[in-house]
Image (cartoon, rainbow, N blue to C red):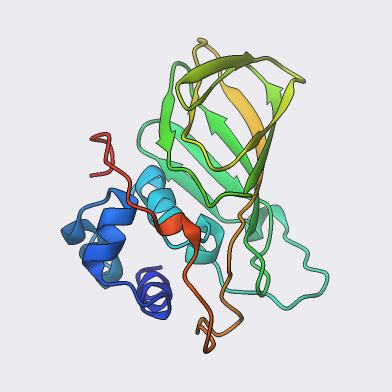
Length: 207
């Protein structure tokens, strides 16, 4: 994972300082992650991925060919967060595509944190399988119950929490807009950097 982050950062022509400013994650933390000396939380990893105009899936999985891809349950990447929740990635990483389909389980009364805006034009869709989800978009909260779904533009700050004393399970599909690197991870002449690299202040949870 650290090698993937370093390769994508260099392909985007970003220094550690640039990536730190864009993600709100400290330069020393990013350096340690790239060297494999520290395992980031899911929230930190998502902030790094967002600042790179990419997704957690691309930072944790190898790219597949543009063809049918079967992911058995055992093949799916699962990221467990110490705060008491997990994200299961259900979609493969495809060439030139920044799309992620995930199933998230939040433990009782767990707050998964607030996530940075993606590039303008990004889209996110959420559907609750069971339990209660408190979704906050740029400070405005909505409470979703079992069977409820919502669409929202991905270029806003979005937070996920479970306000109830029972687990919450929800699905999220994320389509990230912007210029995506081709297979091989190198920008071609004339390509420009994604809009998702704008600086964002840390809320204190990015360390």
